[in-house]
Image (tube, rainbow over all chains, first blue to last red; front, side, top):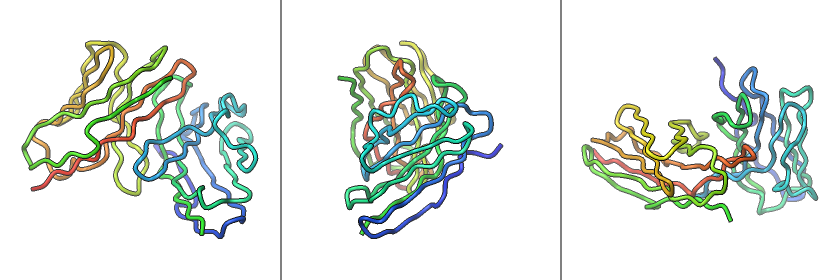
Length: 113
Length: 109
């Protein structure tokens, strides 16, 4: 069974440019998560979807970050405009139900110059 | 405030030298304690979930245990391929995970 797929794996952009990350969860998983991981830190939740509804986006910086999950499957996380401090790894995870084990993708490493 | 603290931050072992990693937590409405392994450049890989104090789970050289305030990941006779960062996460009633900073384990041959 395929795991969580993310693309791109790496992205380098200039500050103030837009960037988007894509995630395809494990088939049949209704709950999808986006996390941010800084170097030497554990992942921190940005947003959680149950099907196509964002049920927890309290930690998402809404002035520059946005996310969508069309048809309750794939998801896209966007940053516009990017800032130097956004350099980090963006992880996507999915679980069958909200309380179930979360399985992570390989992440997208973003570098903002 | 919900919090997860892992210690030590880094641990260097010789091959075969057993040890334990600690994860202490203060989380209201705990819904499971999760252990993940993370290799450089990869996403966290699920290892164990523990739901109640006294519960233990094993996988190869790893054994995870849980009390009301902390969890331990015991590594018996580690090998170099066990080198990784081990992350502990507490599941909250909302369905979210709160992670510790991890313990970076290095096992030398």
